[in-house]
Amino acid sequence: MRKSEANKELSFDFDFLDKLVVGIGEVSQITNIPTRQIRYWEDKGIIKSLTEVEGKNRRYNYENIKKMLLIKEMIDEGYTLDAAAEKVKKRMEMIEETLNKLQKKS
Image (cartoon, helix red, strand yellow):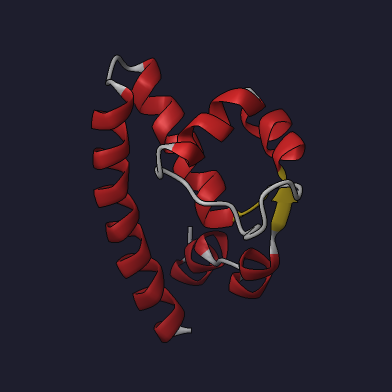
């Protein structure tokens, strides 16, 4: 595989990811995480919806969805919720730094 082909496979549509916002029901369907569990994680401060007003439909962006998937993966591997959340927080910081570097290159 040529280098240009490899770079094309790794390219991200940052504009799309910035605009990606979905409701809690859609997130639950996509991730197979029950809405009750998502609400609990939000109540604990592990994730944060984009909805500021209580009673409104909760909406989540790509970053939150990625975080939920990583937490779910860690819990499935035997981590406690708090341990998984802390590890994912560190991983998300690393991912954020990496994506910022990639974005600056393009």
